[in-house]
Image (cartoon, rainbow, N blue to C red):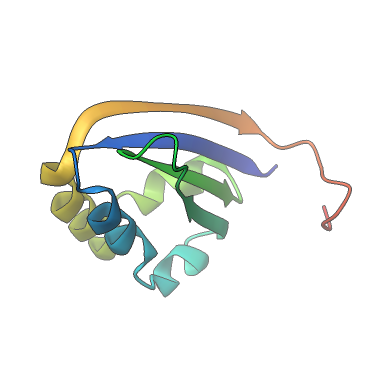
Length: 101
């Protein structure tokens, strides 16, 4: 079943765009690892927050992706820019009326 990870990352003041830039760098290895969607967004009402929505073929694929060299490098680069405030929800996707199961 498809696994979803939807969350927010708090950034240090003025660092949101830098974190967005890190997250938006092409990472073809994510698709190879089982990621079908990785969306990064912002909300002007939360100027120090980045939102991420991910869909994976499984929770295990998501967990394994955290060991990929490119992912580990991006995490290491972003960490000093983050405030430590993070939240998220993980769930099993049951389906969608607009995409194939």
